[in-house]
Image (cartoon, rainbow, N blue to C red; front, side):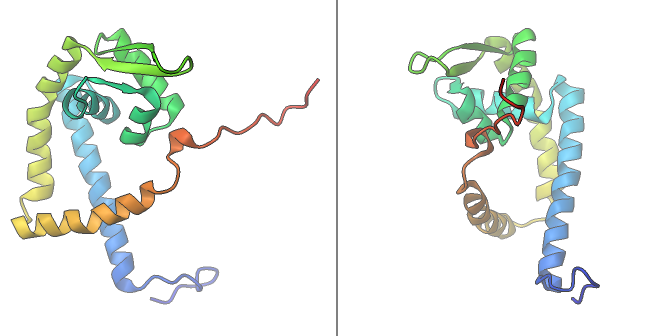
Length: 174
């Protein structure tokens, strides 16, 4: 594809552009519908659902360090701190100091959090199955995973956002 100036130096062919836009549109449409379902079924945002799922389904102890959780849910430290505070107020998680690090915080799912997760999961699975998987064969699903996993690994190879150094204040020192 030939682009007009100043984009004439872009080096994406038609197939790459089609794949890129299809991926972005599928992700946006799926995310919108998943968010809608989660709000209606369990009054959770997608990020809150991912936090509960990581704690309740993926962590054998039901607990993770806040920085590890931020990396896994692909969310900023400050954003996750806010979400964890909201979830703690709702009784879905508890936060406690890390026994290994004075600055670290551990987030643990509560029984109420497990109940909310159990309420959200069936509808979540139904929406994902309906929107993403009904038009794909088993081989397609395997191919999709095989295509996306190395891309995800490549993207995660750079330091996660939660590990990115914070910017220093540019305010003059007194």
